[in-house]
Length: 568
Image (cartoon, rainbow, N blue to C red; front, side, top):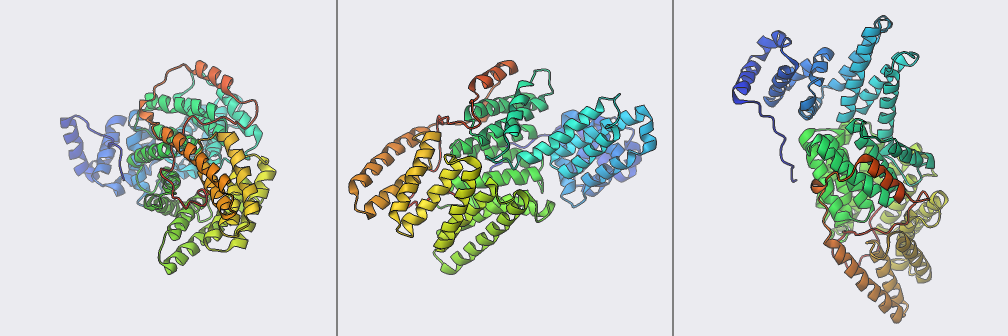
């Protein structure tokens, strides 16, 4: 796995030597070290981490007073994340220890003193923010909730509003991971309202987070022009304000990858996801939630990219890494772990299809089936039956049943997916077209129901071309399906017509392959008020956009026998 350039920690040589000497006798000097300045104390602790003194460092960081001093060293936050994660990897849950210690200090006696109360709440907001940055949301939320409770009835302090803001952002951050096309209109409209409130005087981190989360919401609602404006600006702004090795820059890259993948630019998406993962590995390493999420995102993008080539090792490696991390830090029924299982199941199915050993193929299919059934049940329990996520799981089961030659089950699953999606999204949404194309594949390749397959393929093509234009990558599978069914029916004129369409489609795709995406070159080229004005000009009057993508790099040379598009 390629890695980004390592972050550097290089104090002056003489100073570094002195720090090393102190660390060698850390046990003897531990008490006296507390009298050092915050900066120097931080360097001692980081050197202790560098020398693999994680037990001693963990014992130090368990002290809330000590850790709050380390938090005050703002210009070395990335190094703190790295050393903090290393302690968490030793199964010493220092995040939980700190959260419990903080909450225990918010006693009625302490809160009676206004100065003490203000100091405690400020500490809580600082600690909660750090833990949120590091991906330890449960402990971060506990701290924010305690702060909010401590000042909810106090009209004389502004901390209440800050605590509410932090608690709300934590909740939104978790919710945005599960955004679906059926998200309530109020959520989408709220994103646009948030954009209107942006000003240059806001904290940079708030500006970046508003832009990237609103961009993601726009992608979900197919507002691609607005999404592109927001996420490219967020990427450039984050690099300018935080640097190219900061976790906040990695956050924007992941959301840029999400935009590219949904905008049919898969090869650039893989590159951007890889860069984001490199940064998160360099900052956090180990069993970190953010690393796991980046691994899953890269796994799915790699799966889509490698789909027509039949080489899924890269995707499989990242999927296994994601599941391995998440299984260590999350309960078995957590949605994020369920999402990772879904990606793993899709990959196992494709590996099974290309496997020459029948026994191995059966084992792979059975493992994929177990994972799909598990994720479907989790989706039904969490979202209910009438939800796009649930429908997508039905669709993935349909694909797997087709591979397992359980055609009646496959047909039933796809029809169920289509019915749910149509009720929630309408008949002309891309999600509907995806499931319609999968059902057409069964009728065409397995059941020889060519009349029904033709209707479904033509419907899928119509929806996709209106949404994304003639160069969309997924059209290939529908076109090839039409060529096959017309050939099977002896309608060679129509078959030749779609072969010509495939040739024109290939020319468009080749032109798109020349498109390069390099987020490191992006620069902030307008003011925030100018960006807001541009967003307003490009916003679609409806909640879904029919903008045609400018370009799309996807699957390379497709297999001639391609039957269907990748999983949902």
